[in-house]
Each structure stands twice: as structure tokens, then as C-alpha cells.
Length: 350
Image 1 (cartoon, rainbow, N blue to C red):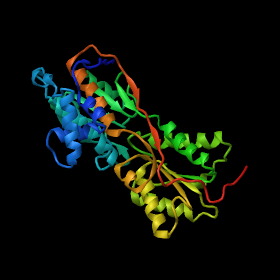
Image 2: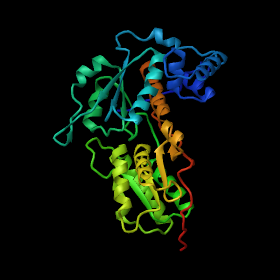
Image 3: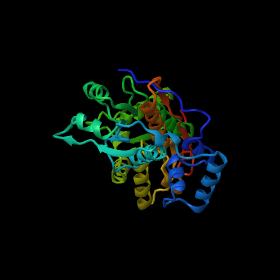
């Protein structure tokens, strides 16, 4: 069942336009203009100035929403206690606030090792008008039921048939990080990932590992399974993975952690053990969380809050206009080189 979208009128400045002009996230713009805390005074002043220059104001259509709707949007997430999901929700909420919608968060649950099916769609469609699906591989029957009940659906991560979606190329993420380390002269490059099965169909770890392996193969570096360890997307998991790697007879000279949170755990353990970063060991992460900049972590940057804002804008458009075209947008990624990567102490030639 196909859904379509069209772009919002170009003549009206959106919250995304203000964010781009002020060089901040949509979530920051939303907080600044609503007088919410956790915004620096200088940032708030800049956002207000830019909003004035662009003649920005909350969506005038927000007061003309069609009757008979709930004026709410659901965000379906596999976890609620992660930086990534929090940033996505912040981006969705910023657009919802501008457009006059409430946001409802729905976290999936696992029972007996299996994902609990998304049931109660009949009740759900009376609570919300549309759903943002975040990194969850819906079963075809689940998606069909949602759409058949009049719910508009968009997604972040895996594309869903007939639904607008956005995400990053996670294979390219793994390749980019690994190629950076290879370019510095590293050959013993470890990967801290998550090779455990996920009941939510979360494919990010697998895809980033594929990029890592592809980069090694292209450079003629033989894959060593001992250098691939689980970090469980936690600080503690990253620290334990670091211990496992350093205990090897031939430890790595560089580590690619597929998430900043695990890279930070590895850095913390290295500091405790007196291992110099990057003198003794280089580390690369993914996401570019705020703490990554503070600690100088080299990482692959993605604008997570903007992913949420983008699909929320699409969803608002869907709820206001039946004439839309399905869209898949691959968001850009960039390598941010800081102080945790350098050439190995002894470069091995050949």
C-alpha cells in the first residue's frame, strides 16, 4: 500500500531552516524558542535572531488541523534509554511542537526471547494519526494493519515498503572508519560491535561490520576473528571488550567501535591501565555524541536529531495532503578526526 509525500511550501520558513541558519539542531531551536532550559544564553540569542530574520513562526496550519484526528504522532522505538533514540525523539518532538501535534512514545518489548508483536492497532489508531518507526523491522502483517486502519507510517533505519524513510549507509560507516585507520598505517584493527542476535531486526551492527570487513579486504589485510568482540552498546561493554582485546597475544594497534558509547568505555579502561591514546592505541567511534567532542574522540558523525525531524516533517505533510511521493533519503555521514587516532608507534610495512 503506497503512501506519498510532497515538499512543504518553500515560501514559509520551517524549524529546519532556522536550525540550518543558526548551525544548531532542530531540538535546540525548539527549546530556545519555547524558553526551555539547557540552552546557552548565546545560543538562545542567536536562534531568536535568526528566527526573526527568517520571519519564522510556528506552523500556521497547526490551528487548522482537520477535525476527527487525535493530533498526536507515535514514535515506535526498540529502546528508550539510549542517546540515539533520545536524539531521534527530540527531533520528532521539535517538529510536532511546531505543527501542533503531541508525541507519544511506544517502546517495544521482548518476551521469551522473541519480540512481542505490535498488537492493539485498533486502539492505537484512535490515539495517534501516524507513526515514526525507528530501527524496527516490522512484519508485513503489522505494517499492513497500521496502514489499513488509516495510520500514516514513516521510518528511520530499515526501509518499509511504500513508506517514506531515512537513514545512513551503515556499511559505508564501517568502511569509512576502517579506511581512516588503514590510511594511518594500522593493520591490526579490532572491531567492538554487537554480534548477538536482536529480536527487533536491528541490522546496524551487522552492516557496520560488513563495511569494516570490506575495507580490510580491499586493503589486502586478512580478517582475524579474534579481533571482533562484543560491546553490547554500553560503556561497560566497551571496557570489557577492551580487556578482551588487550589480553590477546598480538593485541590490536587500533580499535573501531561501532558506537561512541563503546569507544568511550574502551578509552576509560585504557586510561585506567595507563595505555596512551593515540600513542599506544588509536580508537574511532560512531555517532559524534556531545561527549565525543569533549574527550577528543575521532568518530563518524551523523545528525540523529535531524533524522527525527525529517521524517516527522514528512509525516505531518502526509497527514495534511494525500498527494505525496514515496521517498528514501540517505543522510550524509562525515569522519570527524580528533585526537584519538594517529599512526601506530611502529608502522608495519607490507
